[in-house]
Length: 311
Image (cartoon, rainbow, N blue to C red):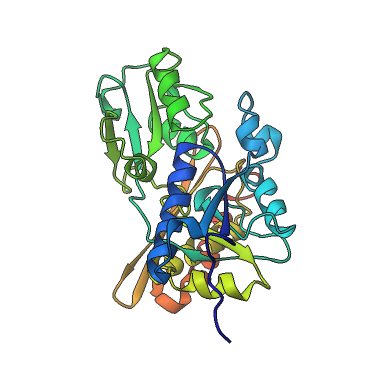
């Protein structure tokens, strides 16, 4: 069957959130598809969809519904045909997709590390006792308090630019961003220190872009297969299986990272009490093809070690 490619007259519609980072990710997807099929940029249209998570910025995510707040409206637009594919930051994605949608395409993963950002260029170790740090991430909050229970944590929601403005306004002395986001935005001028994963395990799927499509759309399936990054897919299979088995949401502080080495996959996982008072971690390897099973096994082990009511 001949693949019918999009044209400027009938473009492929790419759905995305409207933040500068989301648009950068959608543009990267468009550029990769255009290059793979020798198409002009005009054969694609980027459709901005405002989600509940983007509109409601004055409350923590856990109070208004968790991770699905960044995807629900976009997925509804895809199911009703307003867009053809959707581009997501994978760390925002629930582990289950609505019936009729598939998430099986990933772009090459960026830097997975967290970035510690202070306007004076200081490092995490330089923070004075009792300093105020802004973050909306329960994982970052718990990891930070686990190491520095003296620190004060304030809610810090919004896109990269919004959070930097809050720093400028003196709401907090420092914050955390993802290195991947800063790199994709070309924001080399932001004073930041990358935190090594041995010190602070990142969120599951941090640094990865995922592309969602309708399950019955064979044209998009074939086009997306041409830009899928196989290694990122293997790593995320392990990480997201780990997250799914833990019932991960925005209410559970969880870190996880899978890395490939030859024919093996290494998975590191961590769960923390929300106040940072306790953490349980594991580090294991398996054959690459057993990554998802490794994720499920590690989750079961950590749940057993932590005991009931840990979260």
